[in-house]
Figure 1: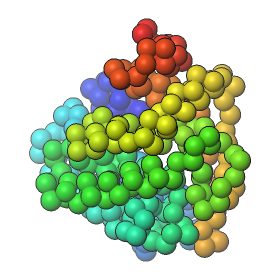
Figure 2: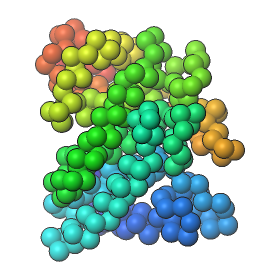
Figure 3: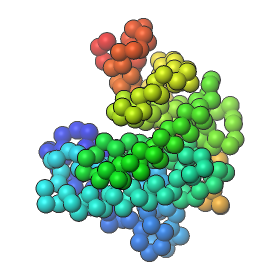
Figure 4: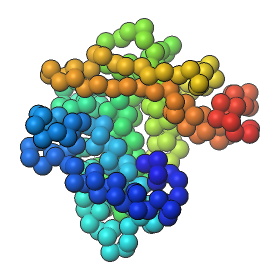
Length: 274
C-alpha cells in the first residue's frame, strides 16, 4: 500500500512481486483467507485484518493503471472480487462489526478488524473495475460498519480495542487510524457525507484534533493489546501513533469546515503550511 501511494511506475516491479506473493500465500488447505503464521506446521488462523489489507492493496493497484497490463486486469479483478465476497460474509450482520477471526458473534466484535474492513469496503466502492452489484453489497456492509464504529466511540477515550471491556487505556494509534478510515469514507463517497452532520462526529473530530496536537510524535511508542484472545487464539494487535497521526493530520488540514486555529494546529503536526 505504501508503494502504491508513491510512484507506481518506478515501483511497478516490486508492487507486482508483492501482490503475487500475497496471492500465493492465501490459505487453501482449510479456512480461506490469510493466516498470521504461514508455517505449514501451525494451525491456520485466518485474520480479518490481513485480508482487508490485501484487498486495499489489490484495489489500489487496479485503480493505478500503471501496475497491471490491460489483459491482466480481468484476472486480478476476479481474484479480488472473491476476496471481497469473503470479507462481507465475515461481518456480524446483527451489529455491523467484524471480529479478528471469521466469527459472527457480538462477544467477538473488535475495533481494529472493523476499521480495516471499513477501509477495504470504501476502496471497493471507489474502484470501477468492481462490478456494480458487488459494490452495492459492499456499500451496505460499509454503512453498517461505519455506524458501529461511530456508536462505539467513547468520549474522552476514543475506541476500545475490545469494545465489550471499557478500560482507562487510550489507544491513540487506534484512534487516529480509525478516524482516518471514517474520514476517508465520508470525504470520498457522497452517500456517507451525512455523517459529518452528526453531533457524534463533531465531538469525535474535536477530540481527535486535540489528541493529534498533544501527541509527541518522536516519543510515540507501541501500545500492545493483550486482551484479544478469541476462542483461545491470541489475536494480537499493536497500535502505533506514528504514522497514523501524520496521515490523519495531513487529511484534516485540507478540510475547509475546520476552524482556522485547529487547521493550523494539525498542519503544524504534519509540517504542512496552512
